[in-house]
Amino acid sequence: MKALITGGAGFIGAHLAGELLKQGNQVCVLDDLSTGRIENVTPFECDPKFSLVIGTILNEALVDKLVERCDVVFHLAAAVGVELIVKKPLESLTTNIKGSEMVLEMAHRYRKKILITSTSEIYGKNVKGPLKEGDDRILGSPLKTRWSYSTAKAVDEMLAYVYWKEKQVPTIIVRLFNTVGPRQTGYYGMVMPRFIEQALNNQPITVYGTGKQTRCFVHVKDVVDALIKLSRQPQALGEVFNIGSQEEISIEQLAKEIIKFTKSRSKIKHLSYETAYEEGFEDMQRRVPDITKIHKLIGFKPTYSLAGIIKDIVACLKSKP
Ligand code: UDP
Image (tube, rainbow, N blue to C red; front, side):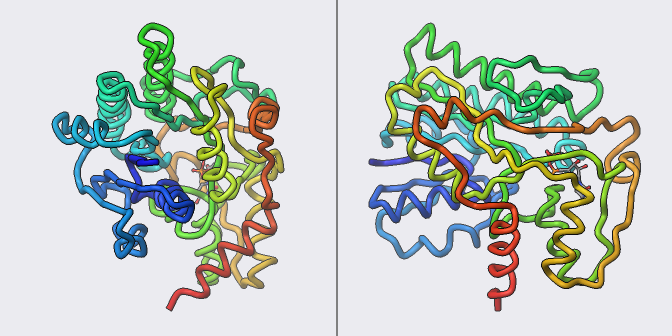
């Protein structure tokens, strides 16, 4: 199989590229290195089955050429990370809407299978848990930048769904819930790499808001495994799937667990959302996926516990020269 991974130099994309190569597939990565990092893919450069194209998903001629040459597209290129979205809302909207439309249009042109990665942000402030794929989206004002990300990804989902329904383009949509693991950067706001780095450096652990908000963290290896299995499953076409863990933890408790595991001297420091992000910022209080649908189709079940995930990330950081 020849796979094209847009955003393949990003955290999840690079893990996916590594696994696809390991399984003997050809992999072409398209990445503009805006949030992706060249170091993520340098280990693959000596593999003749691997190629890297530095460019944007907004470049029509380039996307046209690359989609034509592949068998399947994994579309991961996106502006991600709450902090990045809040800091650069215009750029984020453009990449997430126009970029996805471009990639979908090319998949349509060449009738290629395309797996689109969406996000649990889709559900917005819906605190009902566990969230099912058909559940309502509850969003704040469109003038609050956080919701622009949720909306942009919802447009991507609608486009993918409609291309399937009206034009029979083989599309699959996945909603990723707090995916973490080795090599993720905390630079764009993600809590897990931030807390671990703060703890290892004995710096204050920055807990935003009350810290009572909860999340469920899934290991990137479990996610990548699910993406590959779904891409080979005919019954996944035209469908949307949650991918995540159901091990729920509050952010304050996460900070405590990380301090304990790393034997850090760090203390917890509470920061208001206004200080951390912007005036009027709204957070999700709870986010737990219902994973019945993906479990039924491909037997998905996370293999890493939260403790196992923390251990793996710390071990990886410590092994770095
Ligand atoms: N968070 C935090 N400290 C940080 C970064 C994030 O307390 O340094 C909080 C954030 O406000 C949110 C949770 O951790 O409640 C998860 O944040 P992340 O950006 O990783 O993911 P998302 O909000 O998209 O679930």
